[in-house]
Image 1 (cartoon, helix red, strand yellow):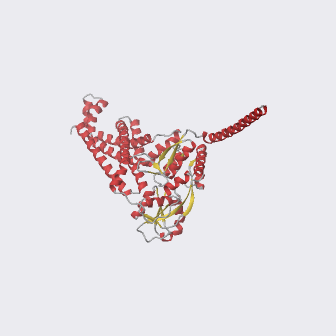
Image 2 (cartoon, helix red, strand yellow; image 1 turned 180 degrees about the vertical axis):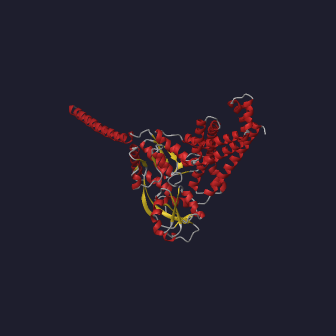
Image 3 (cartoon, helix red, strand yellow; image 1 turned 60 degrees about the vertical axis):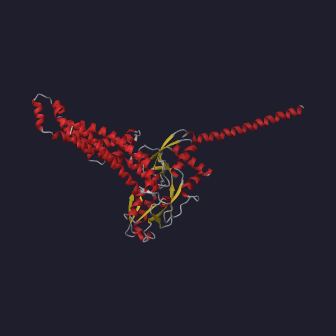
Length: 496
């Protein structure tokens, strides 16, 4: 009995020792896992991307950003316990956003090169790419690179296809044109403005499958690796987490599933020579696009209204200053007008959204940047409209008012301005219409206005002409209604 008790005690001690060791091992694993994610756990990172690089990033019919890059990024974020905010800007704008501190990283089918490694830190490769050449599917004259002498080849700015095209331009005797969007390149080839396009092979093949009207005529040329990028020496924790998450996805098989979802079961895209999907009718296309286009229209109208109010206040105040006897103040207004009328609106859009954050060390909301861009630009024109309207009033009106004992300010308020309002209102309404159309330029910084939404749609379905036709109709209706309402207000205000 005593011996049995001793055996039970020994067995209990052994069991306790085993459990303790197991517990320590478990704690050690948990600690390692915690250490792996502790530096990014719960954090939110802004990641900039392209807008038109299907199948790596594009918007589906519901307006969500999807694609290989997007699915990988979200899966890695989930695996590593951090959150991401996607900024769909376009490739060049995405890099500028990261450089200016508006984004923490960029994932946009970005090829890792020695030149880029001098500026950015890259993750491990998450995709090995390559380039192919494609031509219009009704073109039987071009069989390969040897047939390109004297012709025009289009490529995407900053992409691997552009580097390949420029490298071989002298060898084959063709001219290279660079544009910012894949859909634009394909339209140039279809319309005859370019003879061929050189692009990343998955993007080309996906576009052909979607019915972009092209066919490939050369085999894939192995290319570089795609990587996730951050600024040099910054966001090392994010980069480390991305690499760890990518390794986990590859180990679990989820990485292969994501590639297969967009590229087929063999994770590759075979060269295509004809459209492999039936085209939707225009009505079906319009139905699919309607929600996104209405969102864009809402944003367009709202940013125009906000900017117009600010611009009108600026125009009235500085317009009065412009004609005032106070010379120093008049010169301030004159300089403002000269600066904003003498520089392109896109320069200011990039300056307010990418430049100012680098100066103040803090990011700027895209709505704020958009409103500043439109209002300050339009305000400069409204200053001149107000000045012109005031100076159009007969000078004898001011002299008569002053001779009746009114001060300069009283004469302006009671005599000159009421007449100037009637004179200047039509030009002010015209400036409002111009602002509505100018808002489309904000797509360059990723503002979700009407044309930006259209860009997202045709980036995925490559139905450029039909989509832009819908946008044109929407703009025409919106501007016609806006002009009609503004004219009603004008007639009632001025009792015409």
